[in-house]
Length: 246
Image (cartoon, rainbow, N blue to C red; front, side, top):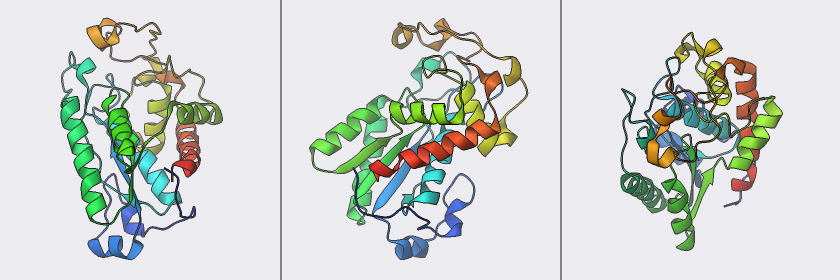
């Protein structure tokens, strides 16, 4: 997925406004970016203290960090995805894997028609397994597409940020997600994460039974260990890891 382009600020300030990119068509024309970044989140329960849009906010925070460091075209997020394992909780909304596959594929095709050569999908939800298939199939057709971050990118970020909880244990609404929101969107973090720790490392029947078989609160991880400083360092590390994808 690597290609030409130097690390640096290739963007206008308008694109940094809020969760949605605020570019005009002239901004896009002037920048002429050949790589687009698409955040994909979800709309699902994240316990009583993080919003349903947590995965979307995380994906957008990662994508914004990337766009601040590389001359890429930042796209608005896909906000509803495959959250079927969270169906037991009010508020969760899902689409099928087939639909998500079609949406991302259609976006990639539209970008190619407009001259954007490559698409990097920034995934904020672990349940979006189908995104791996989208990228594999596109790559087999000779199209330039990548999925970011990989597990290795998250592991590097975890270590650099001083996140104590392992990726296995920090499954949902835990130390990593709480830290990123405390840094990027503290206004959305409600009281309660300080005492919400719950772990369930053996989740072998998750696909069959869903999250409710493993947690009553919806939390699996240690959110009490989250901090804004860790969130800042996590995003910085992920931006650095993006280089080989670009």
